[in-house]
Image 1 (cartoon, rainbow, N blue to C red):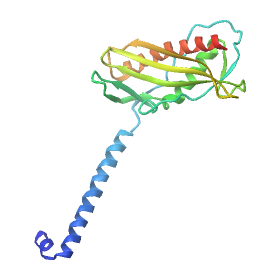
Image 2 (cartoon, rainbow, N blue to C red):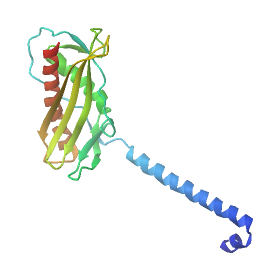
Image 3 (cartoon, one colour):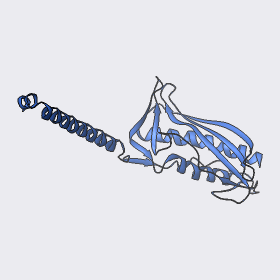
Image 4 (cartoon, helix red, strand yellow):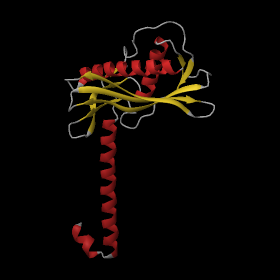
Length: 206
């Protein structure tokens, strides 16, 4: 076959192009299969249960507020648990994850934390005020052996779009084990601390 490629001249050129196309298709198939493997759901999932369990305050409501879906970038925006290594590189744990994409899950836990703090929080409140959040970090920090949750919270006037107040909060928890269920539980604890701080701050601004 190789002999015929060289003897056919123009026909040989066409045959070489076909060979290249076949190789390209094979390479694309390999990439697709690899990506499909990465997209497999985790075997063990967690839902941040307990992260909103903060100390109850007076039942008197501080006023209503709409809680918008948090903003995050990949891979934090997915349902995977993120680990930041000592060199700053980011990876995801292969066997565990969140029950839903993190922004959706964190929104529900934030609503619960606000309600426990005496704030009439909901997905839509009609109050003219909204709580917008950016998830800046939600990861296991291997260099420090801690779970870190960093959230920037803003109270927005929904009529004008103006930012009335803003606050950056951080929650941390020990994470000596960087894999599996211990990593998920450490992040749940760190999230509880961060959400508690967001709820207390928001209550004071309403």
